[in-house]
Length: 214
Image (cartoon, rainbow, N blue to C red; front, side, top):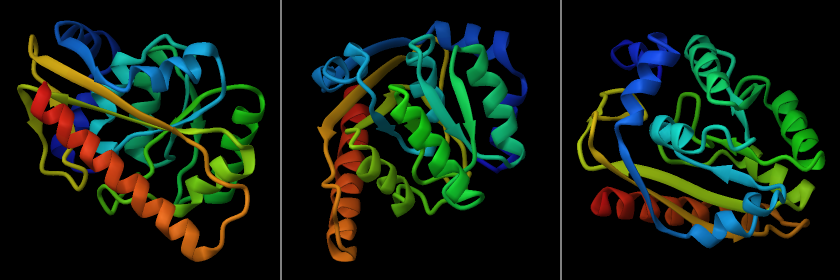
């Protein structure tokens, strides 16, 4: 979300954005058991969501004890301040900048019994493509992957690389989950590629569904 036209959303900060999103009418339209079977029972999990759907997903899951990986660039700092207001523990790093350190933080959090939300196409794309590094966290930790997304009946879709979504006040919004998916601890390069493509396709399909059902 590096486009200046979308940076204002997080720059205005806590009270304004929170008041705005409180008027949005959220409902879960698919996959509730994926949540219930993992973090709903306080079992560690890796939640993957597209960067462009970060705002509605983060707001809907506020104050649920989640950790989230936030990049260290300028927009990342703004997002970190916002989600901390919503009760998230923030881990700093990304799949492109400080990737090894970010992976270690995610593994430590999962090992401590935490659930971690990650935008695997962030911080700068390509849009809706999972960077393989994050799949290593699922492999090494044994924690399941749960896909999560959100859509809005009426919203602003900014012309940034991620098509960042801001639901309009009072609109209806749909949330959906898919999973849990357990990656084998040993995968060769081709198997990892197939898992990557499989999860990308599932999350894109899930996002199409919430856009249609919001």
